[in-house]
Length: 246
Image (cartoon, rainbow, N blue to C red; front, side, top):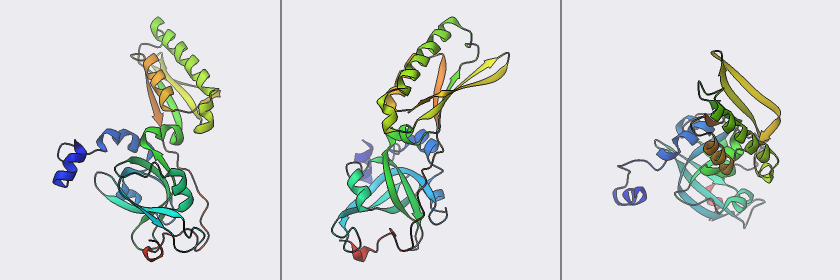
């Protein structure tokens, strides 16, 4: 309905498609696209939004001559950023580079051509953000339930789910993080963390935990992780001149 609304009217009336992902973007991105655009040259960023334009092109010069890459526009509710996905990255993420897809982009900010642009290293579907960009998984026990018999049973079940997840193959396709359990004892907040327990907060795990702990504890993923990249050598992987692509 929102897509039809945009196509017919040129703008959204009943709501923006990104509204449903507001929490994820706030958790894993350092700010809006307008704020990211003000960051310095070569800053490593995680930018979130909707792909409103994707144009596959063929590089004419350089190491990637003859290979397909892409130019794109990423937009949020208030602004947008242009960017480029070079050949190697485009080959790995071409199926995600679809117009109207909501994504997070791990990128470098480039001001070399005047307007800020994103030079993308990695593209992550918004649904998989926690699996790759989380810094911690937090379980907060509801006040007054820390010694409740039903709550203890639910926490034991969650503990089993976490131990199983820690040894699963999911750890091979994501970023393992610490698990914190917060509770209250005699009016004081107590934080518990196992130094041996690390899990990848992928969607299936989060769903299992939320179901097991419903009414007992809140499950929350914390962000803030920004993958760092090596500073590019002079003249390497700059945003391409439109004259050198077709």
